[in-house]
Image (cartoon, rainbow over all chains, first blue to last red; front, side, top):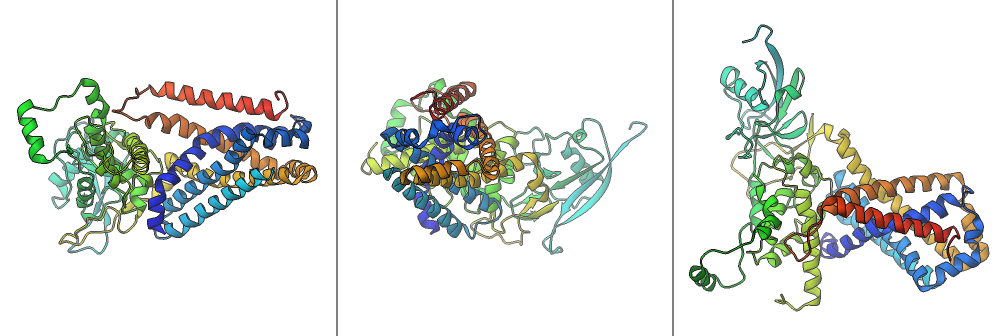
Length: 119
Length: 255
Length: 146
């Protein structure tokens, strides 16, 4: 497993880097409105009523952005948690921890692709 | 000596492999002079109190990289660290993350292995004999000031190993090449005279992978020569990824 | 003041002839302010992972239909969710400042065809892009545009 992770390292790092940069930049606006603005009543919930929300998400750019909002944070998160495990002396269990975390990110990404196709 | 002589308690790690199971701390009470560096305190102990203390030092002006030690838990060059920055007591320990040979002396062979592994010399693509012929006919390699500027900062490393003592990845992952060695390997990758970046990038993606770096940035925080190894390591990641991508797209031997 | 590092940390390939004591790491390391910040940086990974799955849940509900979507969206009004999203926002800003402010300016490749820009310029460009994209998304999602 460690050897496999080593060979995949450039891909993992690129996905992590994209999550760190693009993911952070995209998520901020999303969290401000969907996570805070609407629930706190600062933004009207009508803005994301089903017809409009579906219209925004189901055009091509919307699907790509939505997939990015799902997948990129997953890879950033998985890689950083793996680093954190290392910082706490997890070198001997790195194969298992890394493998599990990236598997979770991969499953989430695939589920994201399915979700975005099924819109 | 002044009227009220300042005294200081200096705690030093002692370890003699012939006598001690584990390292222990020994305390000394010494008079200190204004303007002293930490190294002066250790030298005082060696000269006047306990000649058995073992430690490395040389230039006493922060260019040789010999006197690196942990001072109150932080890696420092003791010849450059003012005693007045500390209060009545100070603890001096050997550099973190290295096996301890004796007292404040650590085994740096592990670093030398990692350093050698990145081929820290100009690598030329051509066969050596042909290259030497061309070299002899044209003289030295030339390089513009701009080309020198590209790698100059990373060449300022004095191998003091403070960065290794500060790096959490070095502490936890024995295979990791480490800040200074990566910085010095990268220094050659971006040197216009060098043609060995393919080989070095393969090493950067190997067992000691540069991607183990998690950007703690501690290496750059403690570096006494402003080498900024964190910059080198993260540039090296980018370089290694580009090299990997080129390897996927272009056939072997493609420029 | 010293605890144990990995027992094989910085070990030479060939063992020397004398016994060495195992590598040490300062016990004060964990509490040092810079290290605490660094560990928090890694810990934001957990927040990002959860957020990714939350967006997945919303996307899945949107695909199922109006009832599921409305239920999912209104569930976000739960104070726990609001608290979580506040935490996400703080994490995003913290990560952005560290990644864009400290890391990206240092990563500019050298010795290549591209010029090396001053750190302030790199920060300005990336923070600018962050602000513009955020503003755009806020305007779109709150119904001001489109």
